[in-house]
Length: 504
Image (cartoon, rainbow, N blue to C red; front, side, top):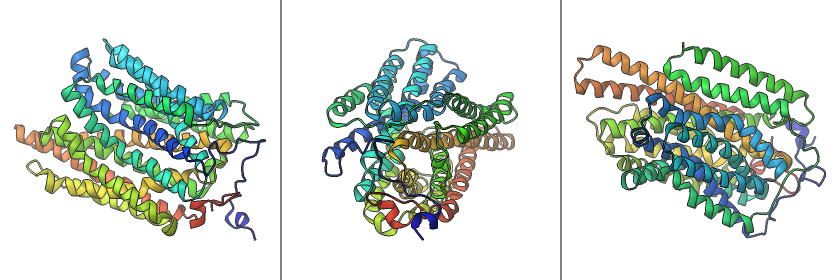
């Protein structure tokens, strides 16, 4: 019996002119590694944008006279547009051209950053953030798709995805440092304007180095699918973002169920379409589905961990924005060290072990952080937890994209890449909402039992952080059994084979 029949997953043949272009750079082309550097730079820009803007928000609020609600929308609007348009952006990259989409996405993101950096009013900043989300929805899947088609198999693929995974896991902490430096020594506006020189370098390098690749054959756009998934994902992200006002608020009760219904309709439409926006075969594979679930749970825990860690460092321990960012660097350092080490052993150990153990290690780090106290020190109560989180995240992120995109036909590279980013984005939105509600409930209960002194208020904040860390640990721990039972490809599947690669 063939491997495909034994596993239930057909092999993915080498792309032909009837379906898609072959990889843009050959396996012996040294420019592939320059391409990796360009794609990594773009990914870093997208990842940085979340945390670097968070650091700048208090100063922007004061400068522009924003209300607390408007300040929240600066974050929510970016996530809303980005999440809603990701799948469409992935298909545009497939059909229009991944290099072209990368350049337009990078350039548009830079222009939107300029508009935000020179904003003189709240609505101008909000409009710029929406534009950033729009172009990020084109840039992110195009970047990952370029990596997928240019590193289709072999040990080079593992190295490439190790770099990408390290940036995905550690870029947020780098954003905290860079945001702290720019806010403290320049202006909050530079937290947006810094994207411009990065974009100029990335575009200037991409034009001569990256070769175009795009899908051929059936390239009609799935308009009903695009509308349903954009409205569905947007509704879901918006609904969870409003949960900080309480789970019983009308926005939560309306938009979350509406998002679920629209996404269910999207699945029905995709199943019947002969040119789907997201081919269901991408999601149907058990191994890939396990990777998507793991990415969702990890994204939720990572966002919750970093968000409340920043609050604890600045509000309770009294760190400046710069000190807070520097205090997060040990986690990034451990991700880089772990990614470098794991990439050497991954061909021999496979992906199942690290993706099973990684969530446990991250959960241990979060549980350690859940023991923080008002008068505790950074070195004793925070640093060990960050080291554990960094090691665990490296074990997750290094193989995650590799597994999620293994066996994907180059025709669907953009769509599959968008799906990987979308599940992490949705996970982050859900995690932010859920952990904020848990934090708020714990703080309220602690304040009610306290004596109203400043020390009691700090203790209430810490109780809230403890609750958020604990439940984030529970959430990411659930990814361990998912990986153990679902992410079970053979070692050769990770490396790929020529001319076809199996995933089973």
